[in-house]
Amino acid sequence: MRLNAQKAKKLDVFGSQSGTAICCSVDTGLFVFYHAYKAGTDKFRDLFEVNNLDALKLLRRVFHLGENEGWSMARLFWLTENNLLKNALKNGEYGIKNTIDEIVFRFVKSLQTYPLKFKCTCSVCPKLVRETTSDEIRPIKATSIYLNVLSAFTTTHESLCGSNLGSDEPLDYPADYMIDDRHPAIDPEIKLTHLETRYICQATRITEITKLIHRAPFIIANVENDKSSILELPDPLFVGEHE
Image 1 (cartoon, rainbow, N blue to C red):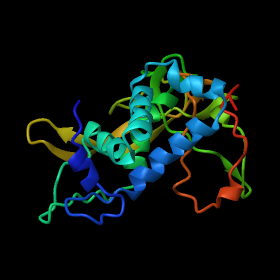
Image 2: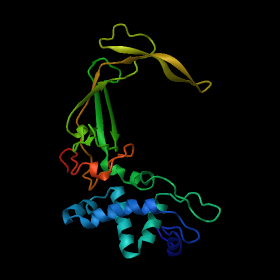
Image 3: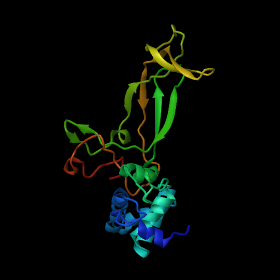
Image 4: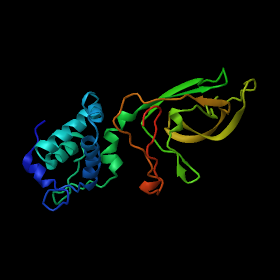
């Protein structure tokens, strides 16, 4: 992909020139990754270099452009490669008003993908085993203190199953169940949502211990719903066998 140097100059971080993008969040997110990359050991940097995952290739390209052609070019590459310059304003500026998670972190969070496997303890449950993946990592806060381990990577978890058993009461169902009389259902003919009664499995569901699919050089922990200071966050944070 060819990058236009003149356009890159106009994408000034402070928005001081015409045809600009307000890019503070972009720069902050990318500088975090670059600082970690440069400040880490050779062994740590190897985690960025040896893997051909798309997210790491994207970051390597940003680092290369930043070091060799300047951060204006690196920024332009990030914005165009991730299709973030969609709508220009009337004055020729691009207003990128979003969270750092939306314009930076979400494009590399695939590095921290992990599988989730749930198994219902009722042998006749219609969804005996469910499997999915997630890239969301949230530190656990207990009695105002963050734990330095993520329990999903160290212990199994129990919860209620919640599988839909249908609209007819399963009188011979061997496990507990509940009635949900406000279950949303869509009428396929008129395409409108209405409420129906459903029976829901209440057997115990066990979530197995998981681990990261990739050997990621970093993880992005989500604490956006908590107003904690940086001093309250755990250091180090253990993700399974990784620190």
